[in-house]
Length: 270
Ligand SMILES: [Zn+2]
View 1 (cartoon, rainbow, N blue to C red):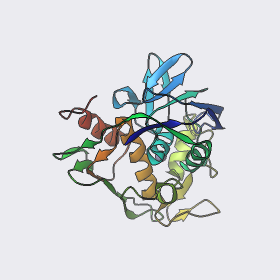
View 2: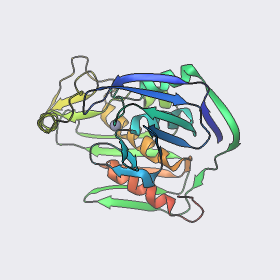
View 3: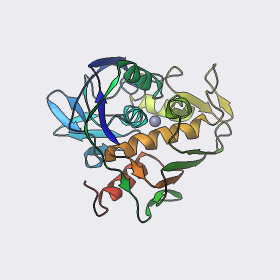
View 4: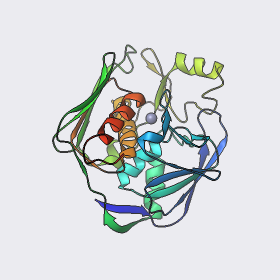
C-alpha cells in the first residue's frame, strides 16, 4: 500500500478515561511511521514499545507513557495512515465516545496525502499463534480477514462472533464502543481509575442489562469493538497483513504478543 499521512495539522480534544483530565492531540504530517510524542520524548508505535496491556495498550519509552493508543491506531488502520506524528498533552489518549468514529471522521475531513513509496504487506506463510488459558489468537496464510469470538457469562453480551474482511471499516467497525462490566467500573473507580469514564464513552453492562439509555449501536457491538481493538493493536506492525486473523476470547496482551511474534518472522522487520 501507498505510504500515507495527514494532509495538514489537526487538533483533537477530549477527556481521558482513567484520570478524567482534558487531553489534546496534535496530529502533524510525518514520514517516520506512526510516532507518539509526549513532552520531548518520541515513542514509535511499534510492538517493542508497548509497556502495558492490562486495561488498554500503553506505549512507553524513556520514562514517557501514553495509555489507550489502540483506538486512534485502529482509525489509522481504517484510513490507511502509515505515517503520522501524534503529540499528546497527557499520559492517556482522549476517550471520545469510546469508539474510533470521531478519529476517523476528523482525520478524513482534514484530508490525507500520499508520501512517496510503498509499505510492503507482511505475507503470512505459516501459522503464528499465541495462547493464554482458553484464550488464543492466531494468523494463518490467506487473504486478509479478522474473525473474532467472545463468550461472556453476562447475558447482555453472551457469545458473539464477527468476521471483518477489510471492507467498510468506517461503517462496520469504527462506531463500536468500548465496554465494561458495572462491577469492574466500580472496582476501577475505587482504585482511582475510570474517573473520566461513564455512559457517554463506554457501554456498561450489568448482567442481562445494558445501562446506556440509548442502547447499542449494533446487536453485536461488543465483538465489533474487539475487532476495532485488534486492528489497532496489529497496526503497530506498520504494514498491512496478508493473512487470516482468528481470535477467541483474546485481549490486548495476546494481540500484542501476536504482533511481536509476527515481527520475528523471517523478512519482517521488528
Ligand atoms: Zn478498545
